[in-house]
Each structure stands twice: as C-alpha cells, then as structure tokens.
Image (cartoon, rainbow, N blue to C red; front, side, top):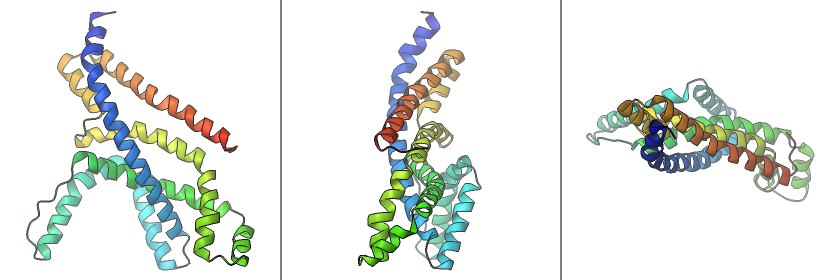
Length: 232
C-alpha cells in the first residue's frame, strides 16, 4: 500500500467512523421528523377548509422552491436573530437564542424533505379508491377513523418505494451540513485534506464510505418492497 494511502487510512479512517455516527444520527432523526411533517402537511392539504389548504400550499411551494443549502443557512443564522428580535419587540429582552449546528441541520433536513414527502403522501392518499372511504362510513366509522385506520395505512404502504429513495438521498444530503459546521463526513475530510494535501486519498475514502452507507440501504429497501409485494 502506498504510504499516502496508508496514512489516510490510519489517520482519516477513525475520524470518518465518527462522522458516520453523526450522519446516521442526522438521517435517523431527520427522516422520522420529515415523515411526520409530510403526513401532517398532506392531511392539511386534503382538508375541506380552503384557507388551511392555501396556507400549506404556499409553505410547501416556498420550501420546494428554495435550495436546502439556503434553508440550512436560514435556520442556523437567520431564525435565531428573528426570534431574538421578536422577544425584544415583546419587551422580554434579549435571549441570545442559538441553535446547535446538528439540531439546525436535522431541522433543515426534516423541513425540506417533509415538503417533498407530503406530496408523496398526498398522491398516495388520492389514489386510494373512494369506495373504501364510503364503505368505512357505512360501517359507522367517522371520517377521522376512516382516514386513520383505512386510508393512511394503505398510503404509507404504497409510499415505501419513494420513501426509500428519499432516505438514501437524505444520507447523501447530510454532506450539506458541513456548511453550518456540523462535523460530519465531508467536513472531516475537508479538514484532513487541507492539512495533509492528500486530496485524492481523502476524497476517494469519503466516496467509498458514502457508497458503503447507501448501497446496502438501497438493497434493504428493495427487500422490503418485495416483502410487501409493492410494484413501482
């Protein structure tokens, strides 16, 4: 093994393992929150109340129309300033509000992906045969019970292939958290490469780590699809 590759493996390797923990943490919490946000937004967008639908249409379009990178900057740098200004305006004084980089990153991933996942859930709910809703109502269920016990479970099942794709995408998008100083894989690699000038070795190892994370997950999602007999 070339000396540079050996140095990169010995020195950068353990650091990347620590970065993997951060990536998995951000992805786990970010995706759970994104799924919850997506489902709630989808339900609101299917509401009978036009003002509520209009509000969430605007919110989703704003989020989908701006880059995740900009949203991360906004959550980490701008929102604390706005909240601090609001508290001052209310006469509560300065609270010096600050978010940790990781919590801001998780929030950014959750909000961004939640907007896209909401469209997945909304489409899945709309594809459910209306006869099932009518049958549920005829059996004495309320509309909320029909939605919760009949419609949503089927919509979640039908959304598994797309959700799996978004999960893999989120793992790769955690690299954007480096811009707000989250010590994940990319930031650790950039730091090491700038100190040692072992650019080829560093970024090659980074790419391999992302492949190790994403490829098995893609195959796992295919196995889940096959188990539930889901056709893309």
